[in-house]
Structures are given as structure tokens and as C-alpha cells.
Image (cartoon, helix red, strand yellow):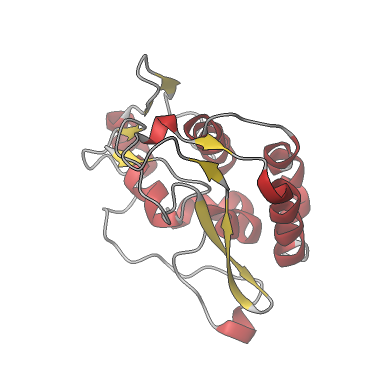
Length: 196
């Protein structure tokens, strides 16, 4: 079981698809603040930038699937503008922008639903739609057929250091690990699957 993630980093996706016993995203876990459940990190001209989805938490000890997305601060507009600014000149931004933009135009009520839809879209864009059998189980968790992934994806084991890929601002900042899957997708496009 792994937690939900807002455009999780490459390692999070690797854990999801590696087949190392992680075969679902757990929405029933206890909510933890200031984590990738509602945050992602991107590379910008000025370094890294954290994008945080504002949430409404019903209680300090609630489950993740009880957390709602807040409309506070026009965050979708802010996040989309940050992505356009950071990746507008990357090799594949224009190719994938129309697939990502709906996540900033449409509304979701629950964070786990939003993250589930993002995860499904990212797996499709990376090219894992043929080996992913994802669906929403009765408890709201996203499940994946980990056995098929192990046989077909060729993903490295969890904990393996990420291979370096092209980053738009690499000359300025060097290679920065742990970035959102969007960084890999916008910079490597159809080759992204090779880095997971």
C-alpha cells in the first residue's frame, strides 16, 4: 500500500508500478500534513518550487479520503501558470499541455479522487495503459495489477537511484532529483517510461 500523491515524484510512480508488493493506493490511511499527498515539486528558472493544493481537513485525525479540496486562493490558476512558466520551453510541454490542463480547469471535491484521476492520466501518458488495470475499489482505493507490471514494465526495484534525464534548467541548477512526474514527462515525453 502506498499513499495518494498530487503529481507524485518518479520514485512514487516507481513504487506504484514496480510490483514490489505495493499494489494499491490507500485512501483510508491517516492524513499527514505537508506531504506529497497534496504537494508536488517542480524545477523553475529560480530553482525548485513547491505547488500545494489547499485542502479542508475535517479533523486532526481524519483519513485521507475525508480530505476535501478547497477553492482558496485560485490555486488552480496559480499552479497552471507555474507549470507554463517552468515548462513552456521544455521539449514536450505543448504535446502534453492539453492532457494536463483539465486538472486545472475542472473541479474535484475530494483530494483522493483528484489524485486518482491524475495518476490514471499520468500512467496513460507515460505509456503504461496496456499494463495497468486500475479501477476504483469499493473502499475508494486505486488498485493496480502489480504482477502484470512486473512482467511487462521492466521497472527498477524500489530504492534504485533515478537515472538522470534532461531538465530544462539543468545548466543553471544541475540535475535535481525528486521532482514531480511532470518534470520527467515534459522533458522526456514518450521516453519517460525508460526512467521509471
